[in-house]
Length: 326
Image 1 (tube, rainbow, N blue to C red):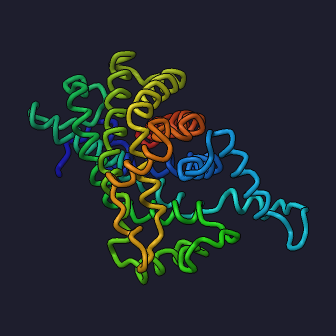
Image 2: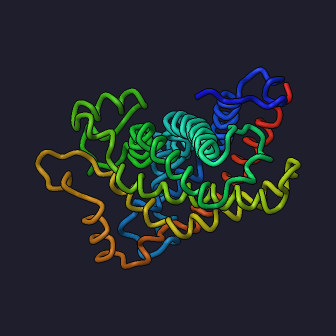
């Protein structure tokens, strides 16, 4: 796509696409490194099917974490093992989040450029030109960027989910379900499940694109409403990102539950477990946990995602501003 560059972008070392990628990668890496322990907590809460409430689930997770972090034949906790267990799955999470944010911001910008070109004669690179786009345009671009990004990164999320939720002391897990590393996970999934194993949970992931699309539509609409010309202040980025994430999370959180539970299901040739679908998992969840099961762990998730979202967007916006000026 030939993009007509603005004076600001012409002075930059990177073109507009490069700026989006680098800004997104930096934001994703920084946020994931800081918030991974909360992601660990969120996933384990989502996948807990036995506890009556979140408090009981948290106690169970804490006990399992303490047990897994003790020295052999001792009740003394190893600090290094504790940190290692909390940061279990950090490799695929860093790779996945960094890649996903870089791709999403890039595709989102490109789809906005493409949309703008259909309603104007020239493509745009300055945010001031986005006044020609409305919330509907932002929503559509968010959907398209999300679908492409989800398909490209789903294998990483499958491995991350299983690495975080599998434990050495869980005797109920199949032998090949415990992954020593990301590479080990890639090889074991291919060996036991084939290529389709990398795309478990893709259906709810594609549906969950709605959350990201809604978030970005609200975020960009708020930015345009607050200030249509000059760069926003850090507080304005903070407010816009937090408000957009809170609304989109509450609306679409049940899809995260379904995706996590589908991705966490191990392969077993002698079981009907591999026939689980989004509908069957939903039915089981309602029967066993009720409708409130769809919002299990949402409090921990909001505690995690609100700071994470604010960090992501502030780092992204500041890095983008820096790159356009160098």
